[in-house]
Length: 291
Length: 89
Image (cartoon, rainbow over all chains, first blue to last red; front, side, top):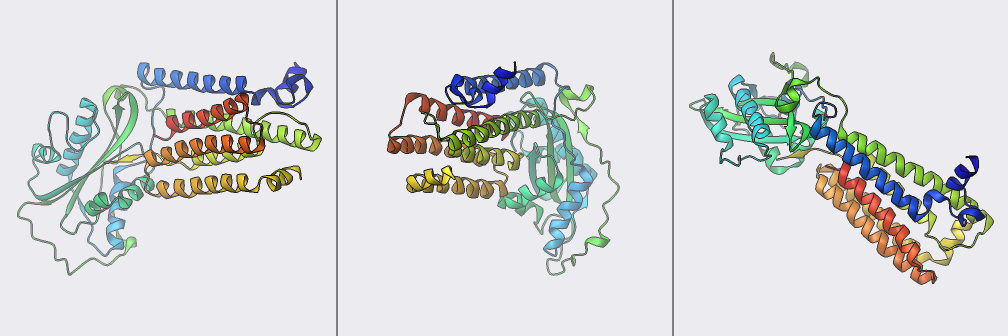
């Protein structure tokens, strides 16, 4: 057993001076194991949609306060939370889960404005921001602010009210969190004086009383909310395999370079560099999508 | 250090590799700012492809380009792309 482990990690004559774990056959095994893990995760997500799922710490009150923080930075007045607009946003999220789509217009031809009207909100101007798969509110708001069209909605001087829905459900077989913002100015409302912006003062900003709990829709609603994301599991397993290969490559290159062992293999140093770069991209990669 | 001797023997090869890695890091963090997971994934695809091309060039110049070496690089690049596809969603 000890000999086999030594063959796995240490280059020597018996393994042709290349650690077994670095030989193409074992690299193939790593790929096969990773694919197996992926198929198990996918099967669990589809067959038992409460076992694995996406969890986020996003709440309605956080989205509201951070949206208004962004407006305050530009000296704009806060958006008032409106229950009817939130019902409209929640209906939109529910419709996306029910009809399994991710877009402003539904496959049945429903536009965002249809949801405003169904909720009973009469608007003079309105807008919609969508997001999914974000873990925290900071990342979500940053993503919207980095997109010119979404940013235009958040800092639009014509909007006076906002409705927000943060809803968990199953979209395309994967449990996810959808965030919908509905912006509007009510019909016949007095226009906001653009020349009198509210001075930025985060200390005096108070969020209205909100129902901050996240709603759950779709197949996942009947089960206990899960806290393990399938993406996180894949990321951890992928990173662990990368870390293992990097460790073995380091041992392998140290031994063969110090012993000046001649052999026909790839460059261990460049492999280490490549895998470290990919590992870093995996660790720092940011998920989430906006629309 | 033997690794530095190797770099001294093929400075251009390792310079190209360094440029590929630095370009990958810069472009990834650029796309990370905009939360564009599609472009973050594309950075991994392009880096893996460039790494494969680099390996062909490097081992051809060294005169030890063998099928088993190509397979080794191909499997590593494939694994990197596979993990990126499944985690950067």
